[in-house]
Length: 175
Image (cartoon, rainbow, N blue to C red; front, top):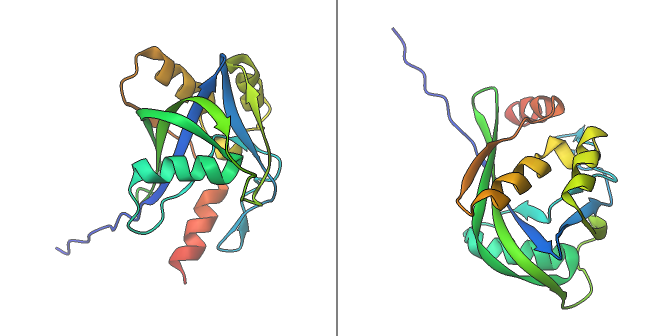
């Protein structure tokens, strides 16, 4: 009998859910993204300010960095609010650490060319985005908001990743 081990290769993302005056800050993607030659259709999609964790970077440092890069502003980062995970083919895990931010103030012009604009939305408006697939990669924005608003405890949310992510990882695995 041969025993095989499956290597789990996580992709670590860090983001901020920022609330101000009853609305949430979202950013709109300026381009489509290509991963391993697969278009993951991000142009015009809305999501929370987020990005990949840099090598040796702490998640608590990455969250305000991503917020500043994508919006040009700062927020009072309160705490880790949620961990949103998704898995493909039982081997590839996407993990998004989402921090809770209160308030927002502009500091400088945005640096990232990947974002076309940012805006503030009510939870009702965000639910409409999800109905029409205006949110990026099926990211569960309204479930995230509901979890964070509920008690302030860290919540674990399953992320239903779109089908095209399977093709991305098949191509990555073949290289």
